[in-house]
Image 1 (spheres, rainbow, N blue to C red):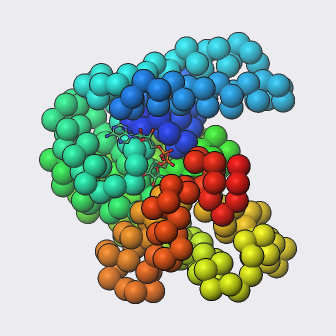
Image 2: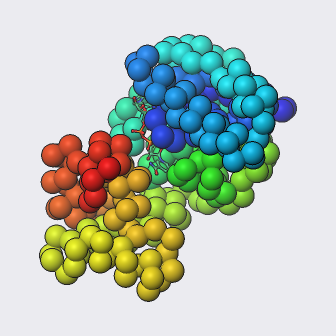
Length: 282
Ligand SMILES: NC(=O)c1ccc[n+]([C@@H]2O[C@H](COP(=O)([O-])OP(=O)(O)OC[C@H]3O[C@@H](n4cnc5c(N)ncnc54)[C@H](O)[C@@H]3O)[C@@H](O)[C@H]2O)c1
């Protein structure tokens, strides 16, 4: 079966990017969130991205208009009933995601694939909540979605061959490079990346160096394109904390203890770029 209709839930930085790249290859996309202002913000982000591509002559105005015309918005998950695949990109909270997968399991056609873009939560937990484990898979895009090539495709114990193959092929059709990853907390990307970002935060907390100095060390010394604290601000400090909490709890090892400074910043509403302040001001 060819995937033609795609539902995306969560119109934040990841969901908007996913909706954009799907519409760009001709898929019909419904982008959902819980409030009108959130779906509107998602569409504004997509428009800005496409306008940038037009101004750089990477795409024509006609292609931009066609891409936008394939995206509709909704506040109702019931509108995703007939989707061939639903890609979930809501906040990184296991209870909220479980409730959504349970709803989707009831709402969507039995043939609909339910994919999660979670950064860390084991897919098996969401598969069980959905009541249709053979149709559930992880589809972990990187940020910013239109730019980054990698997609981790996570196969849980119950994921069927068909579900996995169709999701893997969709990632290829999106001009991404899919990589098979087994179902462990944080998968590969965030099992390795997040402890490094967390350690950079401990360096700030303990006064090893200022954020700018830490980022410079990693950029110039290790050839990282972006320093760890800038990257954490871009990911969102709330998302970073949620991932560290999953690694800490599910892998049951104190080496994944979230940095207290990270906890304090999230409590104080400093979420990084999206709130205007994190390790840097935006
Ligand atoms: N930020 C990153 O760099 C990154 C990278 C890869 C994966 N992820 C994962 O993608 C997901 C989304 O992250 P983000 O950075 O886009 O977050 P975000 O905060 O930018 O957006 C989340 C959106 O989900 C919406 N939402 C919350 N609960 C909902 C519900 N029940 N139904 C519908 N919409 C709901 C919110 O209103 C918000 O618009 C998370 O699971 C995150 O771990 C993030």
